[in-house]
Image (cartoon, rainbow, N blue to C red; front, side, top):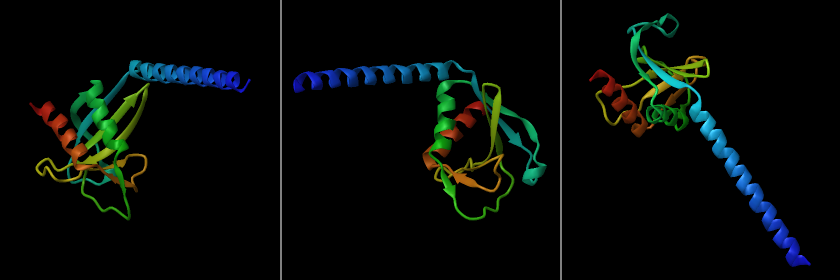
Length: 148
């Protein structure tokens, strides 16, 4: 009797695991089908955050591998504690998906391979985050590709 209950529970667990795995795969596939792009703007120098305007489009990224680099950089960043006093950012990075846009100001030193980039969410200009050196260098490589 108890063997049949264990067998029944094992079958139910197997079914649930298979179904949830397929649901996750379908969600990932649907997400991949959605239009997504990242637009990087070069910003005018020597202005304060409220005065910034988009000078020109440096690059538009639609390739999934390029978008993944930016997404990973944002998701693995670390919050910077305290009040951050900054110069003008180098770039505005706009993440566009499904008709919505989320923008970040990005500070990046193109000449130092050991520096961390920093960003601020445009909707929350009082909180800054730093990117890892690896993420910083990956973004620099993408930006350098656009200049070639």
